[in-house]
Length: 162
Ligand code: GDP
Ligand code: MG
Image (cartoon, rainbow, N blue to C red):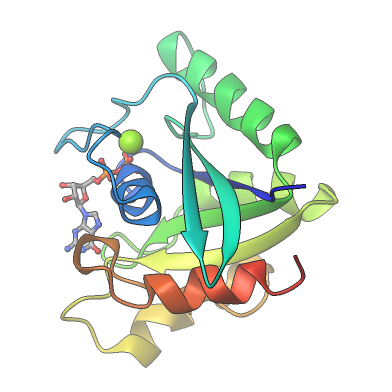
């Protein structure tokens, strides 16, 4: 069985950028405004001889209404379908209440969840990560999806049990 990896998190944290790197495609629309990916999007990738499927989602705000509610629903469906959840947060924005709401959901969910701190380029890594320990999801993993930094090592790590 090919493992399924879901990318979840607030809009604009860099989920589609990571999706593009993990699938080496330009398929997922990357935009400067949040919430563009409204539906789930599926792609395939391969690392070290292991195939995987990755799901991009529109993002969860934590206070969903209207179109945002639909995006949240897509994210929850993606989590259900996944073997592995990559919960992405934004090192530049810091931790916020929406991150905490998503973390609360993921902590009670039984899915294997990895906390991924994106946009760490140009930041001092140690202090950039400190804020995110409080989410209670364990060790935060620093990446810079836009530059592909630490992406291969992260995917390698999450695929280890498969
Ligand atoms: P999504 O809404 O979570 O899918 O986020 P996107 O992938 O569309 O990215 C939102 C914005 O963040 C875009 O302007 C990206 O170029 C930018 N971005 C994504 N990854 C990084 C990163 O590693 N570093 C920086 N500085 N910007 C990033
Ligand atoms: Mg997106």
